[in-house]
Image 1: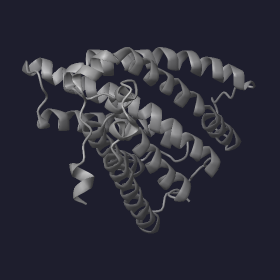
Image 2 (image 1 turned 180 degrees about the horizontal axis):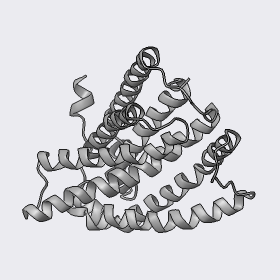
Image 3 (image 1 turned 180 degrees about the vertical axis):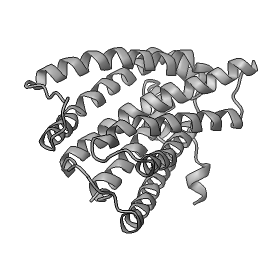
Length: 272
């Protein structure tokens, strides 16, 4: 248990500056790939909603149309997020330390901290199992009616990788880093305090929850109860991923997020 919270991956300032362009391009490519991977899930959600009789939903006849649209939009958004997270917010001393080390030509044993990776994946798994248990209790005590069918497990397996990549780049590397840097600027300090970092973690986790409300609306009616469940669940996971990003960097946060989604959505059945 001690290893879960004590193992850290500290950014190296020299590595970060030297490899900033290489890391930026790598993160941008990851964001574009993650966005494209989401296309099958997004199309399936639209199809299910159309079958359920919802109006105002457009499903493009050609996947290539979606591919072009998502490819261009993810390129633009990815460039903005990468610039924010790795350039504007460099004073926050967060970022992607493991990715930076890949370009430093060090031995693999010096690049990857196995304890940090494994303990983060273990923590994400535990959080997923706890939330699955809470969802089982919720289904017994407060069942939600009027559900729309959800995509099958293979679609959720794909979106686990998509969300793990894009949401960590968006909410941790982008938003969380920007919030922390903004507080640093207002306080006129060179290094963020623990209070500043936790503020960034919580605020970004709140936005992480808010962005999931439109997705929840695809499957259930948004009521005070369903909104509360969505917000609390994502506040817990957003805080967990934010802490992992702070202590161990972007890559391990992505791996942890993917693990959580695979356990929660693919192995588990929270919405049946």
